[in-house]
Image 1 (tube, protein in one colour):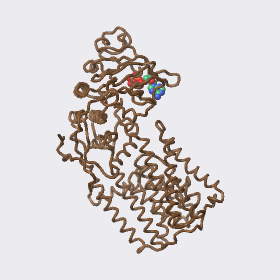
Image 2 (image 1 turned 120 degrees about the vertical axis):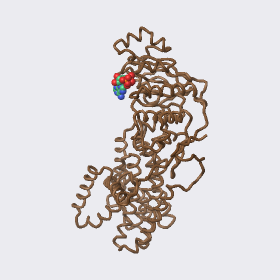
Image 3 (image 1 turned 90 degrees about the vertical axis):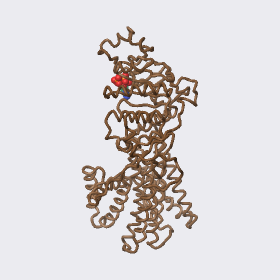
Image 4 (image 1 turned 30 degrees about the vertical axis):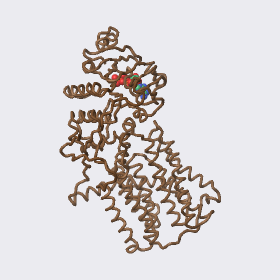
Length: 608
Ligand SMILES: Nc1ncnc2c1ncn2[C@@H]1O[C@H](COP(=O)(O)OP(=O)(O)OP(=O)(O)O)[C@@H](O)[C@H]1O
């Protein structure tokens, strides 16, 4: 069976390789760029070619900064270090060991390998679970400083502050170097273009916009960032190697903090998150620097600085979107429309099967959470059963949301155990806990503004279906519960719409559909009906009842609306000041004098 919303086209089975719109535009752009590179030496003078060779290599480096910062949100100052590592691999091998095709390949391999190893180490230090973006930036800031200091302290081996020069290299004609540098940039840019437009590219944007939400959907954010750092380091090292082989000079500045910062400025000026903007920005500024820095050394740097400040303040998106918009207005063309998506049903799967299926879907034992001296959860223990909706209620500040956090993130609790389908979550990060079968929706709807509904759903399937690296999929595979929610909210007709245009109710529906797309066995819902109309609350209540009954899900539901909880919950757990006050059926809890006493100050019809 295939759900086929009118404007979303026909779902197709996944085939291997197919020649898609992404490939077509990349190849077309690549061919045009290659023609320009091939023609360059025939129309440019020698001085200009000389400058452009270096600018083209730096542009490849800037492109990696754009993928890291513009697309993924990793503000890195460290890309120059990888450029320097590649350059020094060339300089050191050609100076001290030997020169020839074998040595050149060996030096290139060493440069790339060292850069990748350093990138993985830096990524591991910068992106561990819980590290803030500021911390990651500071780690990348330290990298060029450390590499430069190592070069300074290398004595005659590295040439210290003077660097190395005059080592043997290939004294080819300038045209050959130009074609090599241009060809390298075009190849890197074509693959970069396909990469950022692929399913993986949307994952990067999602990480930039809402990293936490990605992690709770089971996306291995840290691993993706480390992989990205490693890939960017390898490209940077190749560019650095080419730079050193062409100029036959290496100096500490090539790995320095100043170049690392300049790369960010060029990216911001060109337009981060556009790829083409930073590439053209780097080439333009580098070429102009070469012409003007001789005659106006200080004034030129001042002009670039002022341009940077003006662009950051007046055009935070940089020049490329502005120019692109003007061109579109003049030619009457429109921005690229999102790819039409089709929903493909996945085979039904019994919730909680597989790992420890006889065990309770969730068992919490002696859970303690302290913030310094403040004890927010004090030895909470209970378990949830398959096919039930377990209401979690309590006054404001009772610790309900903290409980959800401790269940969905192993690093949150101070003490105690949480087991999902019989498997202890240990100190697992949210993505690890999601892989055990926990799906969580947040108190405040947590989505990705610039992604479409369909892209959000594809993202939610990342852990199960993966993501294509150089192409877009036109399908999203969804289990029945997620499809039910989409149908009930009308979202199945709006797969191509950006989520920021959705109503509050639809956003809540989409978040629930995304969580269900991960095929959880335990569903944590934090006030899913907050801000919804009565009709929407009733619809959500019906859906939750069906999810528990028909799909055997265990649903932990935090709610302030007692009538809503009463209508759909089998049992209720009452928290008070971080302790479990009572656990029982709806009637037992509602008629309890103890619970009444605790809530005596609350308005009728509301437990919290
Ligand atoms: N990061 C934190 N640092 C310090 N205290 C915190 C932190 N997070 C929560 N708390 C405190 O823990 C207590 C429980 O908060 P929690 O959000 O879990 O309560 P809740 O029952 O979900 O409340 P509400 O119904 O208002 O959402 C509150 O007193 C809160 O101030």
